[in-house]
Image (tube, rainbow, N blue to C red):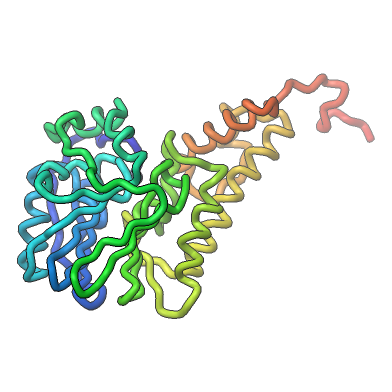
Length: 294
Ligand SMILES: [Zn+2]
């Protein structure tokens, strides 16, 4: 989700592990209904994302080992939002895999604000020690999970975890059934092309993506969401051409998702276009379309 802490601090909780394939499970952790992934091999298990607090991280680790029947031996992070990294403290003794840009975001003041209600100072979180730029294969003995950087999307360091032998991808927050979460750190220009890296992996029948929030999505659903995400930048371009400022964009624009999910991303799109000299201009009344007599 975005860098927004809830107004009242909910008590973290963890739902049951649900099997989604051979020795592959997911559980839903609150707050934020965040997906936690679990993949077990002959030499141990991988946990994908860690929840919102050290206590929740410990609960994830303990229950994961019960259901998997092997020790958790390593952890992967999809991105540095609080509901994905807040439980890292429970995994400090294990190798932690993440995109090489993730550590920089652990110093983000917004993350500190989001984690403060859970008693977590991001400065105390263990740093990922198995970082990568493009792809990383994590061996669990008799099977491998591939971690792939898809490019800038929901953040600038999004990673998906591909469990090829069960055709399942833990997708982090690059897609969500409820619509994309366009926080201030999302990239409205590059997000659609980044999603092509996920879609390309799902071209053959039988693949499923498990988003960071919400139920599983098919390639068709993700492709549709990709198009809608691309339309946001197009709509901003249209609005700027018509002289519509950001402050009026909610009312004047035609948006594919609820405004509250995309407002910061629309703001970013305006800023990016303005950096290139493309900004709304006041039109003189004489050329305003609505006043033309022709
Ligand atoms: Zn997120």
